[in-house]
Image (cartoon, rainbow, N blue to C red; front, top):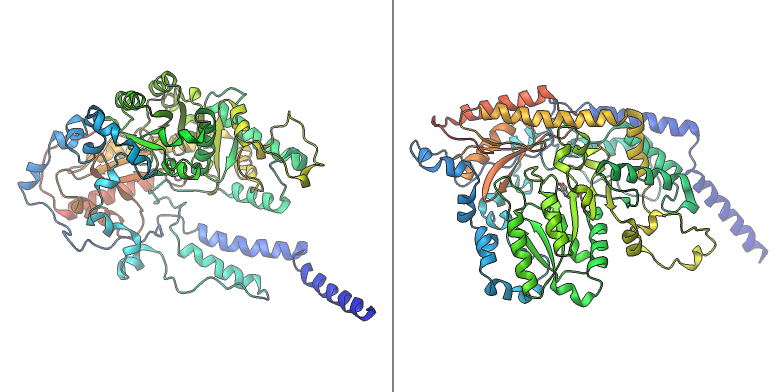
Length: 590
Ligand SMILES: Cc1ncc(COP(=O)(O)O)c(C=O)c1O
């Protein structure tokens, strides 16, 4: 018996020695930090136009490649109708067969189809350019299809030679770990690169990284005041500050989330609980989006247990804004057919175009039909800081909920969204729970609005420092100026491209610019994208809006400045010259 105890003590001593490796000394810590910093510096140096963006450029189209139009054919295809995305196009696009005004008028047939749709889940959206564009062209454009070859090398993304360093029983040196980790810098799309003008690029700042380091080091449980009141206060301060930016009353409540989609999900949960309290009504509940609403919104329905709810995609007008007249017709039709309109989502900054839905008009319709209005401000939201864009957010203060993404407009690292609910009590009601017995000694006060009662999350990352430290250190003005610069650069790019022969360009509302060569095939426009991006210094994508393919440029990275945009403009000019397009007069869109 006693020998067993001695054995166990020896064993424990060994375990203790092993576990002590987790407690690195100050000297070891600074050495690790120093080495990690060196790797970070080496990576950050690559974030300039002297280096590629890391995007793997799609292969040349195997079919219809560089199908530059014949002289004559060009003139036949181009012209004002095609350039302006007006009603003509609405009546002719394939999507319209599924979602346009005709559909509203089709009355009984269309409405009768609702029960069928009810069985098919959120996929059952009514329209969308995606569906229109499912041809072989698109299939060819994904990076996955990239064949190896010189293009891949040029694009800057290195070869994927090895698996990450394996997880082993015994640890290895910090040098080995960092050497392995730093390969990631060559194997990624460099999100903070000034030429990364695709998706909504993520950027991160040094103070945000330090904020994360501090958060992870102190590691408070930040969702309950009993664990760390100050951590909760930091989070609440951010939430209330963002609420004030949009004109929300102090009775609003919210939370930092892992991203915009989760912020949307928390908001939609509150909308569901408030507007559709009985699950038996889920299958007749209707969610209204525009055809440009981010795809993450409809996806939330299944997480909410509302997979069978009906989704209506409302067409957009010639400014790419939700058409409120059609929204109203959709709703009237649904009400007549005993469906339950419960939620409409307006977007202030669509991902594809940067267009802003008419929130006051949508609010009026939502109020009339007792619906919840959610505003998706994930991309555009922080442009509210800019004097020239403030007016675009009129009416947002009347929304029932808002989702924004500090990991977009506040240059926080990925993993930082924010949800706001105008009437905070509704958010709280939606998330209150019976605490586990192991929590029974925890002192709680109903006055304390613990973040864990305002979301479904519990042990979450302490996200506040990554937002707060940069704001405190730089001040709000720095962020305002950086965002205003992006708006100005988008305008500048628009005006410069507008003066460019062969290019049709859509006037930006925020920092996204769409352009194309009108009157030629999609493949020819894809060839233009290849020409522009072939050295990997710029990463842009195409998008399809109202059935028309455009090259899409989003100016969002804080490192992107006028000289970078000038290089981009020259690339467009050179590409057009190289493509030897025939001279033609045409109108500009937007
Ligand atoms: C308008 C809009 N809404 C929602 C999202 C989704 O946000 P997240 O990727 O943070 O979940 C995005 C992302 O680009 C967006 O642009």
